[in-house]
Length: 101
Image 1 (cartoon, one colour):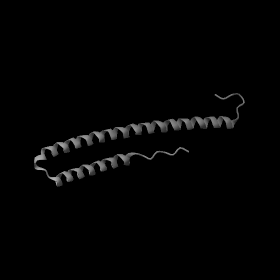
Image 2: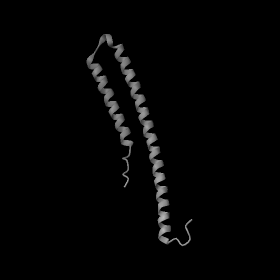
Image 3: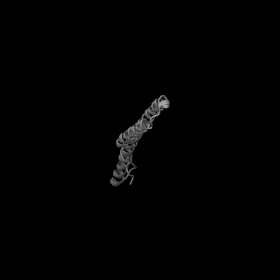
Image 4: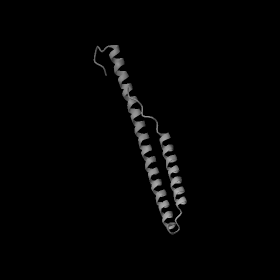
């Protein structure tokens, strides 16, 4: 509540500040949720990358006696393209950080 004799502009200013605080809290919650989602996406991407690297290393070790440099290079290039595409997908989901003025 306001003090007795508070002017209309003081009451309006106070109401505006409360509304602004509510909006900032909502924006903060939304950004925190988005942050958690992006962290989860990056964690999943890192796990999948580790799995693909393990598979590539395993396949490479089984081909060790019959080494084919071109096949290894192609596998590395394929893994690199996949990783760049996956990172681009995650990055495209991230909204730019809002500027605080």
